[in-house]
Image 1: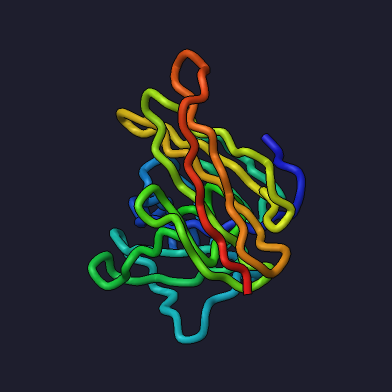
Image 2: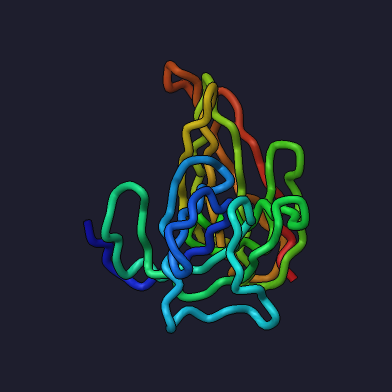
Length: 197
C-alpha cells in the first residue's frame, strides 16, 4: 500500500523485536501500531545518540510518509532517530504521541481540565477530548485560529478526539465546540481561550 506526500511524522515506542543489526520492530506507546524501523545509511542520528538498539529501549524517530510497503507491521521511510534510551530513562511527552495522530508537533496541548493558554503567532495548539455518549463538533467561528488536522482514536471504553489548530492573528480568541448527545441535539458548548501574542 502506498501513501502519497512527504509529510513528516514523529513516533515514539518500545523496541519489541530485533530483526538484525539494521532493523527492529517498535510498538508505539499507545499500543496501536507496530512499525518496522530500517536503519539505512541515509538515517540521521541526533548528536551523541547511541546506535546500539536493544530490546525494550524507547526510541523516538521521524518519518516521511513517502511509502508504506506493508500493512502489518507498518513500514515507513525513517529519516531521523531522535532518542534511543532504556525504558526507565525517558519521559514521554504527550506532544510526541499527538504528533503521530495529527501529523504536526503541537506547541501546547489543551483538554477538558486545561482550557486556556497563551501562545505566539504561528504556534500549533492541540485539543484533546474524550467522547463516550457525546461527541464534540468544532464550531468554526473565528478567523484567528485555523483547524489544520483532526483525528479520532478508539480506546477501550471511549474515543479520544484530537484537533490541531494554528494561531494566526494576535489577540484573545475562543475555540468553541458543540457537545452533541446520541440524539444529535446540541445542549451545551465548551470553549477554549487562546491568547495569541
